[in-house]
Length: 391
Image (cartoon, rainbow, N blue to C red; front, side, top):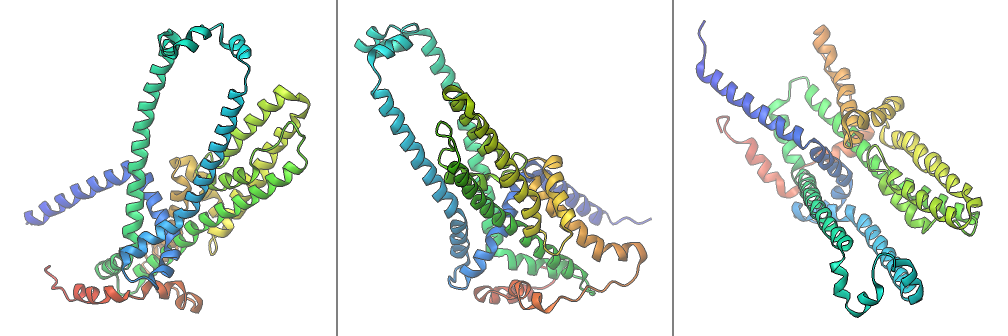
């Protein structure tokens, strides 16, 4: 049997490249998945900005900035609250009686010697050990922060270039892999449309969850006993909405520490009001956490798909894949559903497959807008289509 060695060699090179590319994507799968999420979450904003701003790069950068603006404002608000609390602590420390300071810390340090020479505090073995341990921890956190910043840069880069070049990439893929029956085009269009609904639905869910949290916590404070109240209820509610985007743990990263702080404060001052921190946890878990996550999120994200399957995808995705599973689970569900509906009948029975007609509301809406070429990319697209087949 004659073997085309050149073709076998090129297939081997292609296999090596595919395995290498797959390894890179697998190693940073969470980064890539979150970058795709940012793209779909930002695309509705980008489509509107693009109509008024001609350079695609500027429109993509501005759209990502507009998406991040609410988060930046929330961070500034949180920092302002933190500075306010720091100032209150400093004022409380400044108002302490020197005798109280001596009584509290005199068993550990010679307060009079430290007052005369503050540098002598560094000679204390316990203080030096604490400083060295703190520096080691800080160096470890610096590495963690640097790695997180790198991943964030890659996520934003993926979203930026997908926003800017998505039509060009789609046109290239359709020219290379489209079939005569239009099945590839229908599969890609349906997957793209459902991805957009699911990922933009996550943003809507976070916004609604933040509003529910802020309203619920402010109402709870109306009946809170004086020794135990929810600190900054509006801020805690908004942070809970942002926390809903964190897979697996979700907004528990917000309300669990707040509940622990409230319980400790109540136990020290008035143990009889410990019922209020418990009520706060119950309201947070049921009304702010469970209801939006299991009812609202599948409803806003899974329009056009079975609500139960979308809910299961959101539940099992994080359990199977980790933190990024809340995005990857629905993505796999969408791909499997449309593959089963469009491609599997052809593979199983060999019957001719005709793509389902697209309704008028889709043709004149989102899908028509997606297929419309951008003005400044039209000439380049035509030039690409006119390239010789050997290029």
